[in-house]
Image 1 (cartoon, one colour):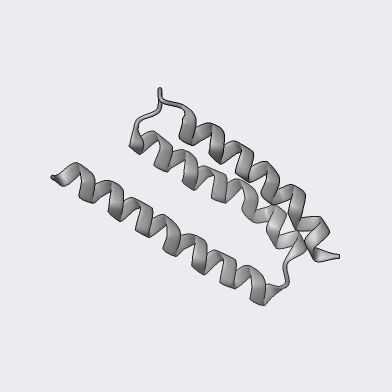
Image 2 (cartoon, rainbow, N blue to C red):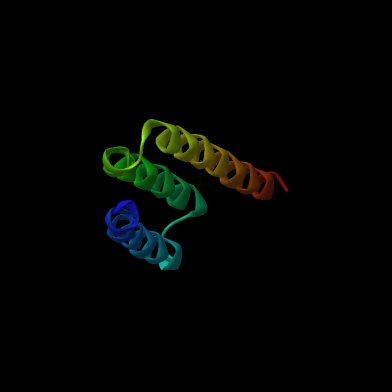
Length: 79
C-alpha cells in the first residue's frame, strides 16, 4: 500500500525539519539551504513510491513552497 510506504519517508523528513527549525545556531539562509537539500534528498525516495503524475504534482508543489519560503525570507531581509 502506497500510504504504508510513504509514512516512514514523511516521518523521517518531519523529524529532520523539526530539528533544523529548532537549531538556533543556523541562520535563516542556512535553514533555507537545508530545506532545499531535504527536498533533494527525499525526491528519489518519493519517486520510487509515487506514480509519474503524483511525483510531478509533488515536484510542482515543492518548488512552489520553496519559492514562497524564499520570498518570505528575502522580504524579511530587505526591510
